[in-house]
Image (tube, rainbow, N blue to C red; front, side, top):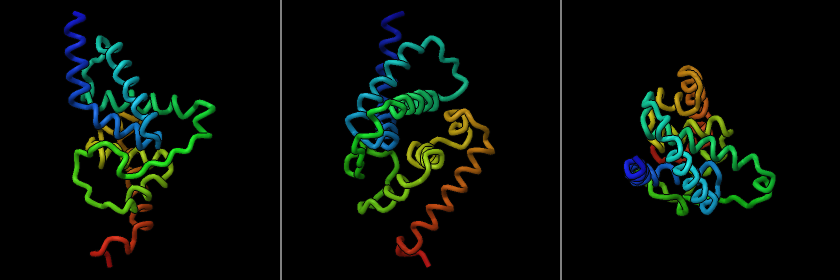
Length: 167
């Protein structure tokens, strides 16, 4: 059983490690701290493998663990005093092709309120559908749709004129 758990963990780390690390990096705005958080996510997942019921995808389950782990990190007293500047170059490779190198989009996303930022990250960077995002955040589908709409409106307003095809 222990060998099976180890193999399952190895599969999860290989399949979702980059996604989890990228998610943690954006949430914590610190690449080194994100590596620690990602390791903790997989440690927590390994401990809870027996309790995973399969009601959501593995990625959704891991994102939920990552979100809670990042929130735990953010609650610590010293976290508020750290310089957490994340540049697009410091993020792990993305699964989608975002070829904007000037950091404008990343800066606009980072400036969003936390509840809106996490929706953008889950939907567009992690590729979760709306229901998976709702499951990962433990909120209703309607809440996800409302937050996504609001985040998109803010981004559209803040990035107006930035994209060359924009009128």
